[in-house]
Length: 235
Image (cartoon, rainbow, N blue to C red; front, side):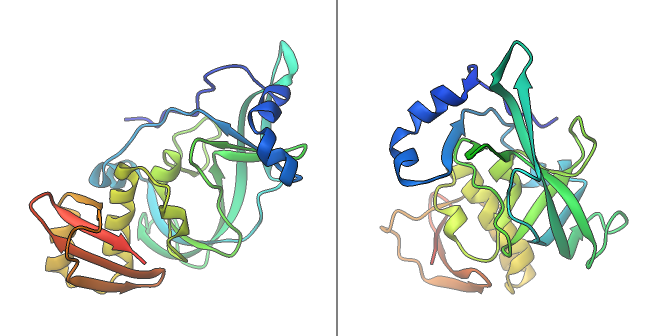
């Protein structure tokens, strides 16, 4: 399956976006522009299959106008028809695609966010990569530029520095993130890893007794097996 590139659901103009984010604009010099997006939603094993490389990386730069690419509507120069940014990352570890890349390399990748004229453009619920933070990234070159890009926005990135990026994930991406951290970032034995990766992971409703826990670089994951699957809380 190919990644579905960001689709603008309506003509996106600076004026409309400023109105839509009026409250936020009053308190910040950077105006937040959320764009409705349509991505392929991959389950964990499918996401690994479509990835050319899976890496742990540290972000080397801030999102800025300098590294952003803004596409304007040819019929209306004030309208933005597409956006992305080219970010620099340092590879810390390689989990898949070792023949293509190695730890210590610094590469450019594409993400679905951009800065332009004081406006921060990004897909729905997507937060851009933070300079200095570490992520596990699922990447391929299935895009017009032919460069490595994050697969399906939040579906293809998991922050390993803290759990902040995971609090607003939808249930499908939450499950992918937990399985990613368990497989690549935990010291659980292979049997326990497999049980979690092959199971149905969901956010705990705080009604379950979470008797198991594992230390991760980003915090503590508490979990337990239930009739519904594997209840998880991240702290």
